[in-house]
Every structure is written in structure tokens, then in C-alpha cells.
Image (cartoon, rainbow, N blue to C red; front, top):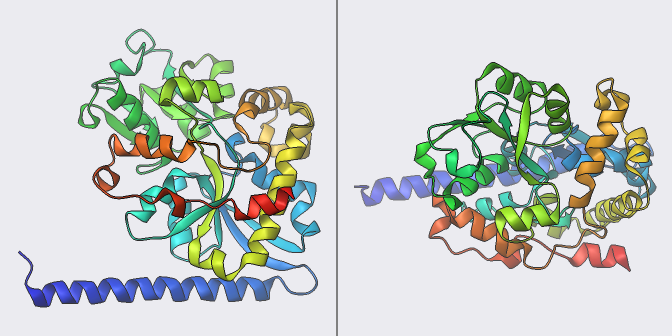
Length: 350
């Protein structure tokens, strides 16, 4: 049992750590703004949970379309394949925003960190549970996850959250399977092919690559609102731009410019074909197969919103999913109203 003195010391240490994080964030804001001088516009750092993932496509596409610069911003996009690491960079003040899954805002709130989604890119996860060709006979539904090794991008990531929910929903306890952090892209493909995992959750273009190689088959497809409804029981807002609430409140003009740019991109995506979108992206994203990359974009496009607005009942679905298995949230009180704001998308639409 903690003594009062030890409890007080721990509280003081926690307060000091929080103060340091706040100072770091302020320093990052100052230094990046200074770095954006010389007529380039205000400099903002955004960490993306995998720049080449189709679910986060609006980040790079906005850059390529010139919408950031049109708003007077110099946006630096950084990539971290696992969303949980991207979240950590935001909390530590290394970046001003994160393009990642909305569900992190709930997880962080119960840990005492206030972050909020300022523009919602999607109303479905865009994730797919893929079973290896070797294990296809033994895994016919999430009910068969017991005793299996299941790939996720990182422990504590959104793919980890969703995998656990699919298991629990289908009668398999989280202790009855083994989550394995395998990242995305080629590391995921290799893990599935070598048998390091029996199945795993990933996104396009990795899904398209696996299907083309006949290395795996689709078990659960959550790339559409219908797929999200079937698997999760409702719309599941996933990819978004989320930021620290204190930074949002003290930099509203900058946030509005970012949201304006992203909403323009979402509208552009809904009036152009997958092939036209693919043509705007960096050449190396297609990995030498432009047709396959365009196909991957086409399969994932239904997940994206047209206006950046949080889908009705979306936050409630996310809370239900997280409460099913996440011990941090299961018995905690979550204020969903503090996990997102529509203030900026409403102005962008006006």
C-alpha cells in the first residue's frame, strides 16, 4: 500500500511530467512556426500513421493538390506506420497534429490527455481481416481466433483494438489468442506468407497486394459503411486529424486553415475517379503497379466522408467497441463531446 508521502511524491512527479509535455508542445509550436518563415507560410508538423496507407490518403493528397499552401500553411508530413506511436508523438509535443484513428481520443481521455478530432475523414475503419492461405481452412470467422496468432500494426493500435473487439464479440476472450505487432506493407505480407501470423488486420494497398499474390483471403471487410455496420454494429469514424485540445484552442486560425484544406480534398475525392486520385500521389506509392494501386483506392473510397463531419452515432459505436475489451475505458466515464469538434468543418462548409 502506498504511504501518503509516496502518493504525494507520485502526484508531484506526474504533475511535473505533464508540465514538461506542455512546455515541449509550446516549444515545438514556436520552433516549427519559425522554421516556416521566408514566405513559405506557417509551419505545422503532422504525424501520419502510415503515409502510404490508403485510409490516410487525404493527408498526402491535400499536400499534392496544393491546398495547404493555398491556405498559407507550410505543412510537414511525417510518417509513423503504427498509429499508437503517432499518438505518442502528439502527446509529447513533437508534432501539432496526428492523422490517425479517432478512437485514440477516447483512450487518451481516460488517461488524462485531452485531444480531439477536428476533421473526420471517414465513417468506416477501412480495415480488413485477412487470413493466410495456409490457415484459411481453420479460420472461417472470428469465432476461430482462439489459439491463433493475429497480426496488428502495433500493440495498442487501432488494429489491435478492432481485432480484440471482433474476438470478444464472437465469444473469444482476448487472452485466448496472441496479437503480434507486424506493422504494415511488406512486413505484414512477409509475416503472413512465412506463417508468423495466421491472420491479421491491415489496409490497402497491402490488402490488394495480398490478394494479387494469393497469399490470403478476406475474412472481415470494413472498407465500407455497410461492412462497418455488419462487423461493428454502426458507423465507425476512423481516420481523422486529431490534435491536443489546448493547442486547438490557442491556434484556432491555424486549425481552421488545416480543416479548410482537408475538406476541399474530401470534396475533390468525391468528384474524381480512383485512377485520377492515384495519379496525384507519389509514384512510389504504387510500388510499380499503378493499376493495382488504383484498384486499392477504389475499394477503399467508400469509407471517406464528403464533408469532414463526424457521422451520427459514430462516437457511440467507437465507445461501445472500446468498452468491450479495453480495461482503461471499460469502467471509466468518457465525455464523447470532448473527443471531437464540428466547429471548424461547419465553417469550412460555409
